[in-house]
Image 1: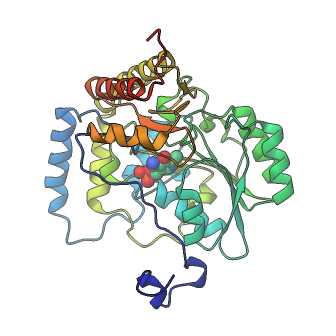
Image 2: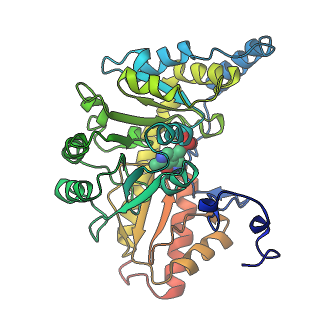
Length: 374
Ligand code: PMP
């Protein structure tokens, strides 16, 4: 590409970043946004009031740097997670993207590698690029599932320094069995690698007890990453965190920027955690909307994957790009993950979900794909 077409080519950027593209989920201003797996339900007024009060209090302290160790926040997060976790097991940053970046900075880097199993969360290769860590794209079965034997065989072949297991997986939505996580951890132990389980959507799982926090005891190189962006409806506040052996949190201190979590972030996250009952009350309705989408898509003759998350990945479309555009014309933004015949949609409020299902039905009628029984 010449300079006029690619202005970056004139800059002395790192050679390994040349030709790369930044994260780019489309940001289009439409009435119904179901493309980035946000929590679309409105925040309860009592939580808005609590957050506003905290901001008023913290405003008086903004001349000072924040608590660099965010101790009160770590206490709240440990209390929320339970499982006997203590503040020293917890680390937090500005979104789980930053948490993952810090982990890649410490355990990856030049000459090292990170493996994940594609299709998976599109940020993993980008975070690998940014930290100069080689990304190894592990494979899944044709139905996008991943079993212990396949994962272990691939790990033994590549011996990555880090493996990231996304569970429930984005974009497919399905959770991993704990047997797979246990087997992967054992395989990583053989060469002293670090296993990260990204549980950004854990609270939406069909079986909420089957998560990797239960595996933390006696596994000092296991990290469970979580976020307040999804179930807590807190994506705009940017608060992600992990639970692990305290030594892992200590290691991350080597790369974090001093005072990386602002006083405002800490205060609003604490307020949200203290009002978690009200915030998490919407999770059940999101599950209901998700299950409704799965059921209706099947009636439409489409094939939704099992979803443990707040989104549904479905196949069976003859032309996913045309379907995506049809929905957009109706003011509904969903995600095209670049996988033929598939789209991904976030479970919305009841009325957003209805609008999506009705628009898609009209599209399938128009394209002649809707079963006669429907
Ligand atoms: N992990 C997964 C699997 C995700 O889908 C996302 C966001 N879409 C994240 C991590 C990052 O979320 P955040 O930085 O908002 O915590």
